[in-house]
Image (cartoon, rainbow, N blue to C red; front, side, top):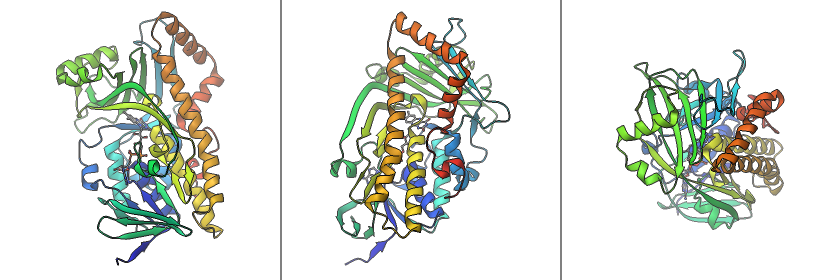
Length: 413
Ligand SMILES: Cc1cc2nc3c(=O)[nH]c(=O)nc-3n(C[C@H](O)[C@H](O)[C@H](O)COP(=O)(O)OP(=O)(O)OC[C@H]3O[C@@H](n4cnc5c(N)ncnc54)[C@H](O)[C@@H]3O)c2cc1C
């Protein structure tokens, strides 16, 4: 029989959340093994993940503690302002809202291409002896007993730990096999994403324009090597229109993009492959079971309208790391039910609140018709005039609201 490889935890799923978790645990002396069927060389190849993520300031603080921020130097574009409008901006119809940071204060977030994040995580993992990667690898058998989980890989290798952390993304098979109950619905929307080079500088401003067919976001990226200004776009359309837009040639597609952007950034040119994602909501009622926890999209998936999905997953990482490190220091079994209950209490409610707020926003801005638009415009105008309410929204965008795990304040545990 093959030897048993033991570690403090097992992580099933080595996406952005699973890998960051392994690094956070290793930083505090806990060992892990990651199992994922994906080939790591493919996941960092150009074109594998064309998305860019808005990393909230609090999440960025954790990246600094873990040494990930250094590896991203020069690739992150600070978001200094967010401008929100119900329809094309600057048409003088009112109902526009902006969040602007002071020169000397932290940005609202940092835009990073996912590929850059993946490269930085891969480099950090190569320097982390406490993390063992089993990628690409498939789990052939999984058992749990009073001491923990044992995973048997397809090649016969056996891995064991007192806790299994599931970071397998939206369609997590381990979560489903474990019988977690999940609320889910489709938005019947597709998000078309990609990047454009454009004529005018973006001034580190993110634009969120709400159309009845769905939100359209332009998110600032750093200039490319030739000095061309670049932005990522997330353009949401109804699922019946998605295939039609996907079939457009680059010229036709760019012309549609420019129309949606209302001339904000001048002429545009596609500079990255465009991709389409179906959008849905899902939320696990509980995020812990016997010696098993869920993190990231395995636990919750939301509309990208507010760019919070990955940030939510990384908040799970920060909270779970704190719970496990403190448990280790007092000599607890890492699969102890009291430890897992603490994680459930900490993350269960926060992620539900963010998820529901995002869902409400998506529905509110998706209602067609003049009356609905007038209500939205009045709401945006009201927030614009109320500094306290504005500050509240800015703290949410920075990820500074709520009971923050220490890593998100930039502190060691
Ligand atoms: C269009 C779009 C734009 C977005 N923009 C933003 C943004 O601006 N800001 C933000 O915060 N979030 C954003 N998000 C959300 C964000 O991308 C996700 O929340 C995030 O990628 C989830 O990471 P994850 O590691 O949990 O899951 P995933 O990235 O899905 O990774 C899951 C991993 O598990 C592996 N896996 C699958 N099955 C198994 C198995 N059986 N065993 C082991 N491993 C398995 C997969 O190979 C993969 O590597 C956006 C999402 C979309 C769709």
